[in-house]
Image (cartoon, rainbow, N blue to C red; front, side, top):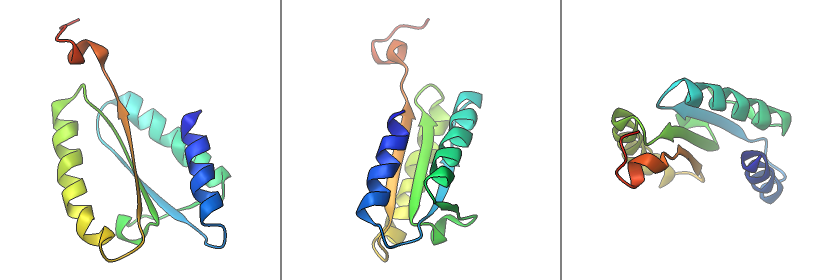
Length: 108
């Protein structure tokens, strides 16, 4: 799983810090399920969940391009977070469920 490899690399680069994470999920049930899996991976690697995203060391956005509202919410939240990132060492990861049908104009 690519997510686990990514989070392991982040943890390795910041060895001496107890990292916290916050996952924001926008989209469908598949996104909710994937967010739960990513939370499990992060906790297995020693990360602790931060209820408030402003207190997290890493923020993971889990979204999809299938639901247009999810994209809009993602971009709005990134705009809000960029001000916090300017004030602290914050890692932002985006996991985007991609729909090839939408990319090439197919409806089904």
